[in-house]
Image (cartoon, rainbow, N blue to C red):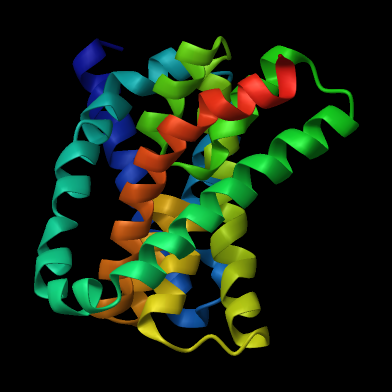
Length: 230
């Protein structure tokens, strides 16, 4: 099969998997049925069952991946629309994001060391609480494995959208700022998609939390390495 046909097949397969899983999510609306999670599971299962390599899949997947940048930039639209809400609550937003990044990194690296993980594995795990492109770059600079860092980020994101709404209800967090910061700081991009289901304000705060978590995490990651390894 030519590269063009392979690319078209995997593009179509990916869209079909997401579309069908999105219909399932709309029907039942359980967090663990988020299409980003279930569609990913279906694609991985298909690749394993057919013995298809990741490189082969990416002949088509790379075209879908190229839209990640514009999708992230598009988050500026709800951010701009809700700018007054954010500026009026600048201190709690910034302090909440900072606490979220610190706890996310500190808990991850502490548990990893307790379980005897290797240095390379810990360095790949450290930036799990920041968005994938930034986490991969940070991991590479620290000496970890970028592809493994992407996996940890996905696990953190999926975990955040599955258990996050339950925690929000348990703790009775109902404000747009609280919901947005919680989902954005813990589950980054996919958390922002979940926040959009709550409303435009929640999505705006979540996009801010995701972006600032990446910036703050980029500065704090070397500090954590210095504290724990030097």
